[in-house]
Length: 596
Ligand SMILES: [Zn+2]
Image 1 (cartoon, rainbow, N blue to C red):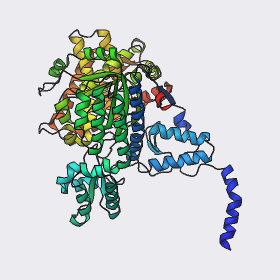
Image 2 (cartoon, protein in one colour; image 1 turned 180 degrees about the horizontal axis):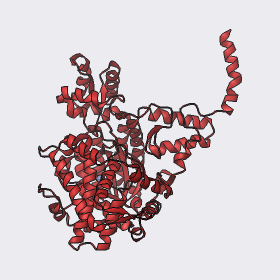
Image 3 (tube, rainbow, N blue to C red; image 1 turned 135 degrees about the vertical axis):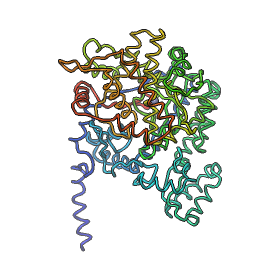
Image 4 (cartoon, rainbow, N blue to C red; image 1 turned 90 degrees about the horizontal axis):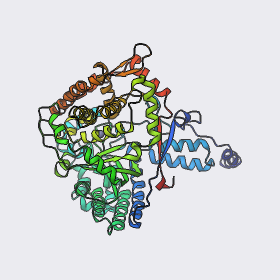
């Protein structure tokens, strides 16, 4: 009797509930979303594809489909509930008639590529009903801490390189996990072929394993279904351009296999040394910034790029003095650097995964062995670097901070020079520590901060040096340095897991203590002492190169700690001026090729 009573009541209530459906608990209510969306600007990238051949346009479509799959993997690797939470939100949105409040939450998901927002004051906060973010993301057991895993790694040194591999996911040894992985492996014989011994390892893990609590599986097993589809899409794209751009086709085929094998060498070699026609693409898991636990795991990206021929020639011409800058660096370590860097200036057709955002340039790969064998690819993304809305926003904040003689010093050209030489900076300096270890292995959690800091400083060092040698004019050097200084102004205190903001704050504090900029006594607006740049830059760069060469993580972390102080009277004042004078803080990237 009870059951039918409840069913009857439910039947009465349901239509009413559907009419008046509200967001369930755990979702940000409509009052919360404007705190981000009101300071968000949509930036749309849609370069013309008219000059592409029919085959190239087909290839672009195939790459778009591959990108969508990698986007899903990226979101899944960032948060264990990302994909389920957005699916639930989409259902809710449909039931609520695409209401503005669910649309706002979908925009936030798109902006943050998952259910965790970065608030205007730089906190991470869930806006959908999911667990809080953890440092392990979803590439280690989400609740894993460094304290737990450091001890484990010390006791299982033989497995360390696999557990901290760029393209592996760490899991706990449980019957359920092993069963799941073995079932997936059985469905994907290609993965089993590419990893001989993996099946046996998984089968025997439990029995063999005295004290074994963790194991690693390759990305191509963890995301086998999606990566198999990416493999097919990349091969379709290769077929479409085979007749018109054979080298690009060969790269795509190699990279498709790399994603299954977890070994990027063949694709990297084809990418770096290939000479492609109009199209290029960055594909795979390279950058480790999202791994807040060890900075070891790569996160998936795909960028579809169209080359600008004239701008590419100009950029190649601008960096022909590489070795002379390397020789002038404040370090005792001498090194021959490659002179034939593969530089290209591109328009972004679409970005997926980790690459999606307003990043203006990329240098890859990071693996020092690949770099030594083949070099690197340097990609400048000019329709982002020269985007009028993004640049006007930076300029407004700059003008508000600076005293009048300096408020015109931030220019587009200065930004281009700084970014180009930041990327070149990754080629210069120290590439291994004194024991011969790659820097990311030696410095671990400090590696990304030190490497990005080095590159920023090499760029400014090159500006002062090329001015001294008469290669660039005083005016061009000033706008280049101004762009470097501008980059150190922060609108919120960084979290330690943010390598770029962290190293920007370090430079700000270093430059501040050395009087590179000073507040005007009367109204506090900032004056630049350009003549102090050369010493300030060289002295900091000397410290950084020394720490990289020494390869001691604790010393590097101590240096980071020393230079990341944040004072209310200094930093908060600048942050507030920036917040008060910007048109927007967040850029929501949209792409014409996706029909947006
Ligand atoms: Zn960089």
